[in-house]
Length: 53
Image 1 (spheres, rainbow, N blue to C red):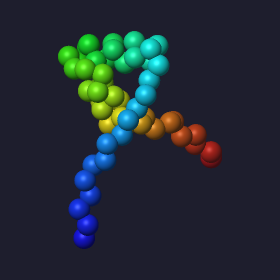
Image 2: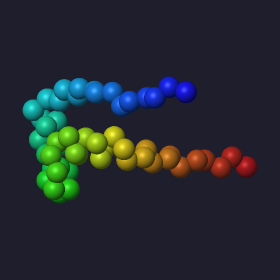
Image 3: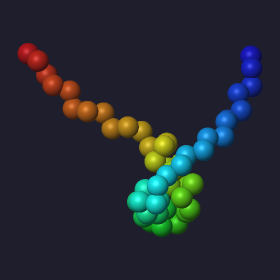
């Protein structure tokens, strides 16, 4: 069995995107890194499936 250590990822954002990320960071009382972690960890909502009868 191998130990997997988490890697370091660098995410580069534009100034406009920084402004967008700043809003959830402020509402969660965190910094941009905390907002990014939150957005990455949030599960993707499933799309509604169509019932074909």
